[in-house]
Length: 148
Image 1: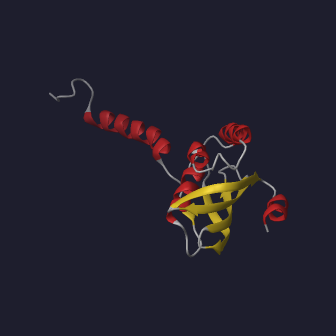
Image 2: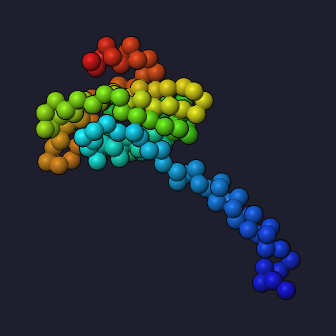
């Protein structure tokens, strides 16, 4: 007799696999395809954003330089519109303005075919990078006019 009682091992194995596959999406991360000269801390922020961990992104937004109410609204919209995060993403523009300032546009692809652009300016303050300005849009014209 099995230590598992009346439940045959194959069924228990199947149950465990089903449980693992159900929990896996909660831990899965979407890798973001960087451009050359990528900044590790900012790549981490992109990966968290792509994986649906939008609050992580807003932790790197410098509240002294942005509107906290707008940030909260954006977080709510992102959680509603893209609750599962994104299937993939890639940095399409990265301009190193100086040693301490980078400007980027990142393209995110949702599983349902929708896209989202995230443009940001980030500054390095004593080794820590902070987003000081950002724009989210599904319209490239809006992004390009506001950023390039």
